[in-house]
Image (cartoon, rainbow, N blue to C red; front, side, top):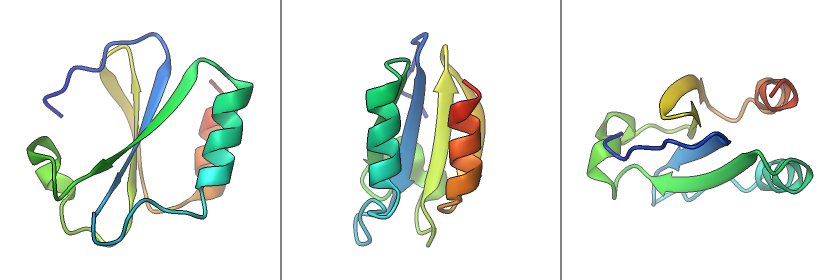
Length: 91
């Protein structure tokens, strides 16, 4: 991403396709986690509308990007709720 994400918090970006929209099934878990831990923030980004996300364009599954202090720490492809939750629990 050309956007510089340089925060001490963990930023989780769900990259999706605008024709599919963000994944609804994982929203409750992400919302609950962000309420419980102010050091974790979430946002969504449409890959087919943002030029710097072109490598994720036309993927059928959403991709979750985990950033901390400006660096990409982990990428999870698809809605792997157990893996995402495990990662968030170990922050």
